[in-house]
Image 1 (cartoon, rainbow, N blue to C red):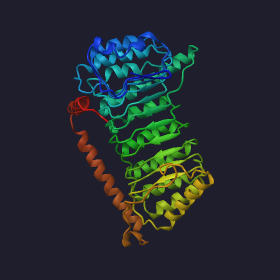
Image 2: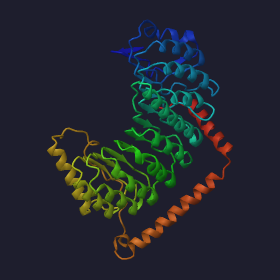
Image 3: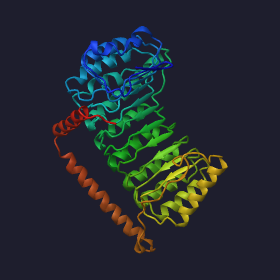
Image 4: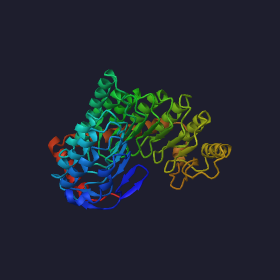
Amino acid sequence: MTETSNTFSLAGRSLKLDTASDVQQHIRPLTSSASYTSIDLSGNTLGVGASESLASALSHQKGLQTANLADIFTSRLLSEIPPALTSLLDALLDLPNLHTVDLSDNAFGLNTVAPLVSFLSQHTPLQHLILQNNGLGPAAGAQVADALTALAAKKAEARKAGRDVPELETVVCGRNRLESGSMPAWARMYRANRGVKVVKMVQNGIRQDGTALVLREGLRGCEGLEVLDLQDNTFTSTGAQALAGVVAGWKGLKELGVGDCLLGARGGVLVAEALGKGENQTLEVFRAQYNEFDAKGVKALLTAAKGMGRLRRVELNGNKFNEDDEGVEGLRTLLEQRKEKAGSEGAGEAEWGLDELSDLEEESEKEEEEGDEDEEEAEEEAKRESVLKDADEEENQTVAEKKDKDVDDLADALGKTHVA
């Protein structure tokens, strides 16, 4: 057990706690003091009995503000997780100051997500939610989104009753196979929780139609958005057009991550030109690696960067241009000058400047020729969209029950595998 200030921690101990007696020797400080503001139980594995005992101790920590419960069910059976999770979350539900909850790296498929849904729909103090790598799948993912929509209504009711209730500000839900099928639910959730400032939904298998939908019908209304990270999903020109159409509404946006999203050359230009309209003066970091950005996109981005005085970091590796292109050199020089002006010579390489362009795909002579280039590019984009659409249709032909079973199988596998 580690105590630092008002933090209680068993983090990374790899303890296998099955019963109440197993856990008691480790949580004596929790039972003898109710002054903790943070608890970290990550990297251990809790059985039903141990969870019930721990829940009893947690219920007295009325000043608790953050709870890290990541990776606490490794090697547990799916039948164990719901009752164990219910005990823990029911205890947290009674803590009026608990604003941050991290439940990453736990298996929450359809068979295990119910306790989480119940908690999320009721815990009005919640501000920051972190759900990374939980094996949700589209069906359970939609349930999580619907729970957060219900939470917004619950928060509104509490405010009407005179209670001081915070907005939901942070939603981290990456590596969860949310797919396009759950995006209508997520769009509704963002419409209901317009105070969201940080959204990270990386690597979720979201196709271009789902990406466009959640941008246009959900995130568009989150005018206070500061961080948006949708890396490793699919945009194509469909998603790029959607992003270009809404990005101007986020006046306080600081970080935008669309790396490995298949924006394409046309999509890259669309996004860069949208940023160049002067509505995103606070942007500091732009991540767009592996997107088939070409020299035209880089040139448009350089133009935009000149008008965004706070931009300090741009990531473009893995795209389709020459490193010695005029736009690339201009962008590199501009960012280096800003770093020098800010007096940040000792800052980390990942914080300032242009990233290392070690994996570029150079443009061919044919692609550099003018004339029919735009038409050919549009045809290629249309073919790509068609292929992806066909893949979506084929994927959607799978019976829902089969998909749900696959997701639960994934969740089962996650439950038996430790995630570093």
